[in-house]
Image (tube, rainbow, N blue to C red):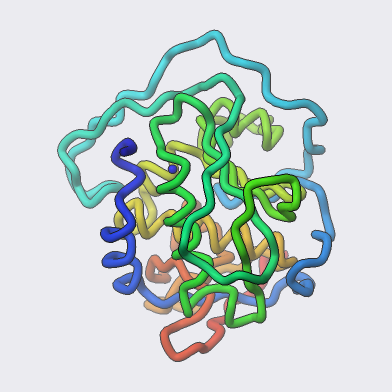
Length: 272
């Protein structure tokens, strides 16, 4: 999540992330103590609405379709108006490569693992470095007392999986027609990141894909910590990290972080 356009090098990630807008999130729902079991195994979608469908009990079946989305774009959409981008596979084999340990991150905290679907065109090691930078950013969930350390085995209590759209739909048990091929989700210990979103960002998000990746991680980790969905606190204010920003900003400004640069937790009205 070298790699396709979506996964930039570590140096570029470190240069870009400090420029991201500070963000806000609310304590809708019951926040849990980091490192304890998540309160609900139901999939929780960040794009566009949550589903109550049960988590599938089997791994995704390999797809026989080699089709891919032609993602050439012009204008001011995701990716800061890049004129062309490589094709993004719509489906894959449903098998994953686990990222090796990176040097970024603390030696203690909740163990997590990073995996990338085979054939996705994203280097697992680089995806792991990017996710580590996001998890350890001072605007992230560390302000709420959470800390994370990368592992490579079953010790992991949280698993980030960058997957093609078809595999994401299978892992997230997507059934609603307008969700198919579009969503990320958190289901049990798994944060499933749609390759399409990892590479392209969101049409509603005013920032490059590298910034939108921070929103995906912060939003789904927020669900894992027990946070519920929020909405815009007012025109011109930062959209909370727990807001489903792909569904429209409702007057707020795109942003990817639960806290601002002064360590303030930026709230927003809870979504019923």
